[in-house]
Amino acid sequence: MKTFKYILSVVLFVAAVISCTEDEFGSDAFVSTAVAPANITALFDVTPDNSGLVTITPNSEAGISYTIVFGDETAEPAIVKQGESVQHTYAEASYEVKMVAKGITGLTTEVVLPLEVSFKAPENLVVEITNDEATSNKVNVMATADYGISYDVYFGEEGNDEPVTANIGETASYTYAESGIYTIRVVAKSAAIVTTEYTEDFEASKIAAPIVKAPVPGKFEVDVVSIYSDAYTDITISEWNPDWAQTTVLSDFVIDGDTSLKYDFFNYTGIVTDYENPTDLSTMEYVHFDYWTNEATNVGFKMVNTVLGEEAEVITDNTTFGEWVSIDIPMSEFSMDLTAVTQLVLSSTGVTVFIDNIYFWKEPSEQSPLAGIWMFAPEAEAMGVGPAVGDYGWWQNSLEDVTTRACLFDDEYVFNADGTFANVLGLETWLEIGKEMDHNMKNVVCQ
Image (cartoon, rainbow, N blue to C red; front, side, top):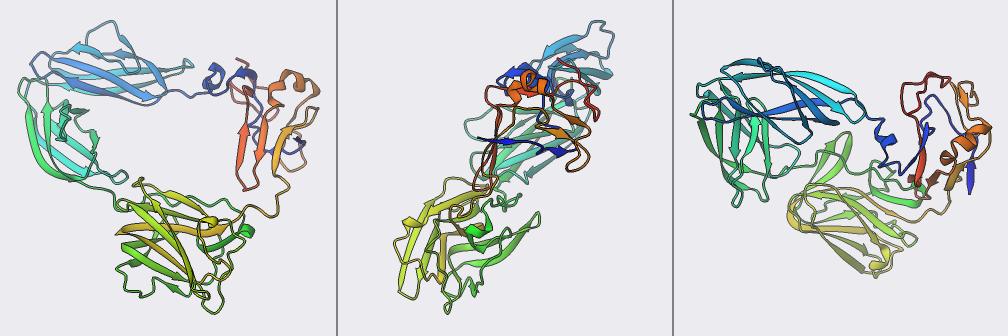
């Protein structure tokens, strides 16, 4: 087992903690580091029967309960748990409803939400229906109306008659199982017994392209032969999408500064390296590529050795749509001579496919000196915090810490040979909780 000593010369000390806990991911001590509730909202679902009955359902990030002050002459507030609702009857008027959300630590956040209760039917109903930009077949509905409080949306998918309810001026969303044209009905409600409706036939569609770039490769460049990737230095390519009578149309697609290949009408395409200088892939163990598609049911990868007239292909079945899929095919699946590869052939089903990070790789031939399992040395000054490398003037662990913080010293820091990292905390670790600390770690409150 390898040990750290003086390895942490950083401004913020993140690893040390204040109390040993059981199962750091499920313990009270861990969640006690949570912040106060945020993004507090409430659904006001009015009953359209002239009664003024409104069902209030609060929600937030990190809230576990809510104190609701109704904003009328009601003296006693209501207290509801996360996921629950309360009903209240209002007279016709405008109100400010106060929500006090409480988190698991006892921290609270307060907001005031407007509520207008009217016994007039909603007027001037305006509905906007759009396809979501990030999720295929997801439709967003926004409705506004004078005197409206909430609205129900019936999205018209067979077998689902339940509406999605939202406040007037907020968004109701629904994801269909399949693309297609659906009849969407919007029912705007005030406290009046009369509602106002809107109906539209709308086509739910898949998103046309990825909204995030492909995963960043984590292999060492020395162990990679790269064909196409922003992460590595690519070998020379003579031809992209050569004229082999295919229907495929190739273009570049850039997202978040990363360029990928966009293949439209993609039945097959070629990538030619160099006929005069074939690529030796005999020491490589895998071929990798990432692809994104909404429609392709398979993606094929073929290698061709034109020197010997040999070729081999692997077809990968696709069941994942609308997100990046990473493929690593063992080179052993290609029954051919790999010492002189000059052509790569990609194939699919004639639709649109995005491809990135085409490279061959092998397990590291030279292991990083960091590779292995590391732990903090159980001794004084094994870790420290300071303003510069070699300067641990802000804080260092003492010999006493080795005992009092023993569960910190058995945590494992795993540096894998492929460049990935894992922090194995075991059943116990040490959590810093409480108030913010100064550089000398004097302002810590144990809990």
